[in-house]
Amino acid sequence: MRQRISPKAIRIAGYLLLTSWAAFARAQSDPDTAAKELFDHERWEELANLGQNLSPRSPEFDYQYGIALAHLERWNEAQAVLLAGRRLAPHDKRFPIEMAGVAFKQKKNSQAIAYLRRALRLDPRDAYANDFLASLYFLQGNLEAAVKYWNRLDKAKAEAKPKPQISRVLTDPVPRVRPGLLDHAFAFSPTSALTLNQLRESESRVRALEIFPDYRFDLAALPDGTFDAVFRGREVNGWGATKVEALLRTFHGLPFQEVTPEYFNFNGSAINMVSLIRWDADKRRLTTEISGPMARDPRWRFRLGTDWRNENWDILPSFTGPATLLAALNLRREAFNAEIVRLVGARWKWSVGAELSHRDYRNVAAGSVLASQLLAQGYQLKQTTRLEYEVLNFPEHRLTLESGASSQAGRVWSQPGESFEKLQALLEARWLPRATGDDFETRWNLRAAKTFGDMPFDELFMLGLERDNDLWLRAHIGTRDGRKGSAPLGRNYFLSNWETDKKVYSNGFLTLKLGPFLDTGRITDPTPQLGSRNWLWDTGGQLKVRVLGVGAVFSYGKDLRTGNNAFYTMVGK
Image 1 (spheres, rainbow, N blue to C red):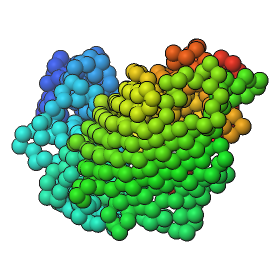
Image 2 (cartoon, rainbow, N blue to C red):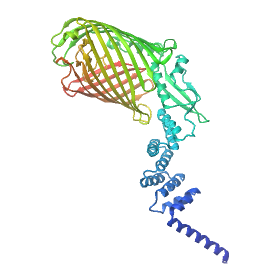
Image 3 (cartoon, rainbow, N blue to C red):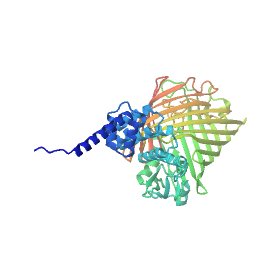
C-alpha cells in the first residue's frame, strides 16, 4: 500500500529545495560572500565543496578555501590553493604565513622557515610570524636565530612580554672553574629576557677563558612559558681529563721532534700554561706562554710569553727538484712578550702588547739575497696593536664575516739602527649551510700586509706550509731537507685561502673531515731573489682528523703554475 505524502511535507520540501537553490545561485553569483559566511561559521567541508567547483577564484576566496582544506588535513591541496592565491596577491603576508603552517604540519620545517621569512619581508613587525619563526629555529637547535626573532616581538607588539624569559641559569656538567668567574662570563641573568647581543657576548667571554674547546648554550622550555638557560661545555683541566688525553696532548708532536706540555685552568682560575719544546737540529725552539683573566673578569686577559729559537736557513727557489742555493744562515733569537686583550661587547676585541727580543746571525752566506739591513743584529723593542670586529652575523643562514687589523712598530738597536712598521688586515667568512651541526663547513680567508722601513730577516713573511707559519699556500712547503727557506719570502703579501669540509665520520671520540681547498697569493720584496714574480695558485684536498681535542691535517696540494705536488702533515689543537 502506498504511503500518502501530506501537502505540508510537500510544501516543506519545496521550501528547502528553493532555499538550497537560492543559496547555490547566490554562491555562484557572489562566491566571496558565501565563502566568508562559511568561513566565519567554520563550515570547512561546505567551503571545500564550494571551492572545488568554482573557477576562477579571487585571492580572498583562495585564502579561506586553503584554510578550510588545511582544517580538513588535505595538506597538498591546501598548499596548492594558497600558492595560487599568493600568485594573485603577492604582497599579502597571510598566504606565506598559512603556507608555513601547512608545511609545519607536514614536518617540512625548512620549507616553513622559508615561507615565514618571505612573510616577514612583507611585514617585519608581524608578531605571529616572528614568534612562529623563532619557535621553528628553536626546534632546529639554532638558538641564536631563535633569540633574534623572539627579541623582535618587543618591537612587533608593544604589549607583548619580552621573550625568551630566563627563569634559571644552569650548567651541565658543573665545571671546575670558579663559579664567580663563570658567572661573569654570562652576560645575562635569571628573571630577565635574553637578548641576542647578550647571548653573543656570553659566547665571546666563554671563548676568552680558553678552557672550553667545545661548548654551547641551550634553552629548556618550562610549563609557565619561561626557559632555563643551560650551559654545556667540555672543560679542559690540568694536563687532560684522562691519562690518555694528557699523553696525547703532550706527545702528539713526537714524529716532528717536539713535545707540547700544557696545563689548563690552574686551581679553577682559567689560568693556562702552554709550551713547545722542539729539539730538531735545524729548527730548535722553546716557547712558553701563561695567560689568564685579569681581576677575575673574562673580558680582560693577560698573556706573558717567551720564545727562543735556533734555526738553520737555506734560501732556495723551490722545495723540490734542482734548486740553486741563494743564501744560508743560522738564526738565534730570544724574545719576551706581554699582551693585554680586551673584549668590548659581542663584536669588538682589541689588544696591545710589547716584545723585547735579541737576534744574531751566524754562518752567514749572504750571496746577493741578504742585504745588510736584513742582517741587523742586536736588541729590538716592538709594540703591537690588534683590533678585531665582527662585520656580519646572519644566524638564520649560519654565516659570519669577521675582520681584523694589526700594527707592529719596531726599533732595532743595531749599527746602524733600524725601525719598521708592519700593517696587516684580515677578512674571514664562515658558512655552515646545514640548519644544525657542522656536517658541512666553508671558510674563506683574505689576508694582506704592507711594511715600511728596514726590517730584520726574522720579521719577513713566508707564504707556504711550515709548522711555525700560518700563511698557508698548500702546494709550497717551507722546508727542504729539514731547513727553512724554500717557500717565498718577502715584505708585502696578499693571500686568499678557501676550503670546504664534509664530516665523513664521527663517533664522539674520533672525527674525520674531508674537502677541497684553493689558495692564491703573491708576496713581494725589493730584493729580486725574494718574493714571487707571479701570482701563485695551489689547489688540492685535505683530511682533518680530531682525537680527544688534538687535531691533524693531511693535505695534498698541486701548484697550478709549476705542476709541483706537495704532501704535508700538520698536527696541533
